[in-house]
Length: 368
Image 1 (cartoon, rainbow, N blue to C red):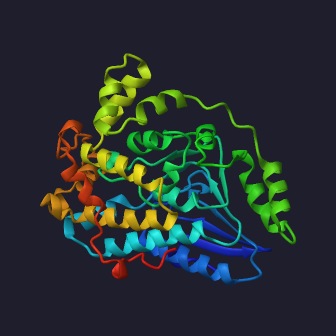
Image 2: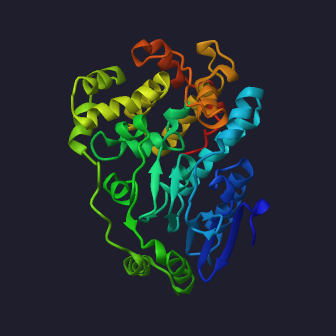
């Protein structure tokens, strides 16, 4: 069985359903047709008693593996913001529904998180039962750099990282290698990148697949990960446990260490408004279920595209400006509004968390 547009390839071998994201020229960035193809495939396999597990991978221009998924198609988002395209509404509703389907999937779901795993790629993988990284893996939620927030369930899974690492990851967008991903509870095992094709094929050969056999399969292809580098949990907890973004930056800039100065510089490059929004998101999400977090993030994303409380049109949003500066014009000189972290007040931030829908009309109201 093949997926729509050949951007999502689905096949069954043995007792396993295999999915390959096959849009390597865009680092497998997700389009709405891809989201729909993935959802259709997973819904069918969820009900198919012959299928005992699902495996998910990406591809690069040379073939399978090498890149997992760089996230949503941000060039599409930019066009949607400029044109007011309502299809963007469907994109986020269906993407978050897919994230929930993966998170609640009743069978083992094995995500081969090789290469780039960012944004929407994290949404596809974090709900998997087996999150497998390699020495080539680069995990990140870099949304504040383009004027957005870490969505696709990011509030939920980042807030459950150890200590205050979630705030650090959400605000800075730092990329993690395999060891850092495992230390932050965003991955489970490190596999040998050179043996990924054999590991993939070996799944199809397992008969009467069960948890013990999956565990043995992981052990066969695992490799010891290196010690985390640049993973200073102590510093993260000292600074990112503070009660506001302004307090965090103030404390970082008052600290002479290289780590503090570098981190403060990272934060100064990002959207001041969305740093405050993301900080509030992580703090709230610690007390939410996965479904509640996705519902909150759906509210937030509506306000990112249609920020009525800011009296801005789509072309004037933080996301439109961030994507323009980073991806379209590539001048890396976004004109954020407000321009400084210290200028953001609660009146700008808190309306992002007001739902634009009544409870009975929320687009994700059926998620539990």
